Image 1 (tube, helix red, strand yellow):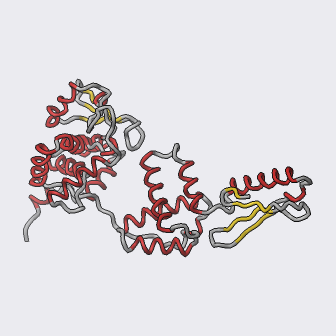
Image 2 (image 1 turned 90 degrees about the vertical axis):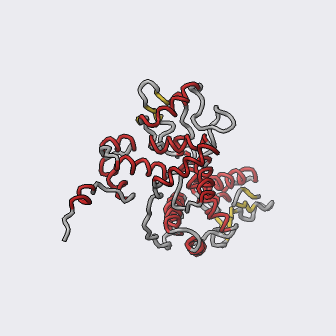
Image 3 (image 1 turned 180 degrees about the horizontal axis):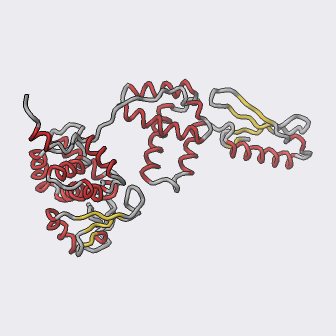
Amino acid sequence: MKIGPYRIYCPDDLSRPWFVWWVDENGVRRRVKGGINRARTRAERMAAALALVERLRLEGVGEDVGARLVDWIESRRGELRRKSYQTIRSKIDVFLRWVGGRPVAAEVVGEFFEWLSARRSGCTVAAYRRFLGQAFRAVGAGELIEGVAPVRFSSSPAKYFQRHQVEQIRDYLAECDPVLWLACQFCYYCFIRPGELRLLRVGDIQFDDWKICVPARVAKNGKQQYVTIPVAFRSEVLKLARRRPAEYVVWVSDPLKPVSVNWISRRFRRVLDELGFPKEYKFYSWKHTGAVACVRAGVGVKELQVQLRHHSLEEVDKYLRQLGVADLQGLEANFPGI
């Protein structure tokens, strides 16, 4: 009798011992009796065997590591943010597709990371190690990934657009894709992330105060926050006042349905490819472009922190340094010559 990865050996002759057996991830056959042979009748013995199987299942004993990984991430689906769930689930799926049904052992995990390292950046490999490590430890198989050395890499944010690039993209989108151009402006002026923007409704815009409420259901950190609508962007935003509050700001076929999770980023990537921009430029480049423009225009760091929704001035300073922006105007103008 088979139940998941377990099999109950149950001969009709009750003088012969019953047991539960399975094949572990190393291909070794395991078995356990667990006291089921103390039962006198076949029905009692079967009930004891089924109870043993349930106990083994709850303890995760004998189950294939791949199945345990999938069960674990699905059990966390309601607890994790949607993006976090999708990130971890996608990495588990990639790993299991590569494994292809083989027993998951430490050697197999090591081979997977060798394969991945030859095809992906250090940042991506490090993310796989972090998230798969979390999953393996959660199902009691952390030792399988301990032999994978941590990946050293230096990450850098997407490049910001220079003025002539902004004009090139603006002219193209204003004519060919005004919906996407509106999304770009929300990211540039208000620093609203694409994952937040796709869920932003017209009713979240406070036209009287020229502010946007980023609700907790939308915000990346799960907290309701507000951003200002700069004067330069207000005429575009005011056009949305004629629409119903329940409508989404960015929509394609139905204003009452949000666009898909990666619609904004992927659609903009196609535009960048068509215009010949390399991979260092992304939709997120609009946020960086807006931040750099603010610094160059003399906007105070505290005001920028509020608009960026960063938790500290130190975080803003680190962010700007990653972009290669610093307040060096005085140094540039007054540095003494030799």
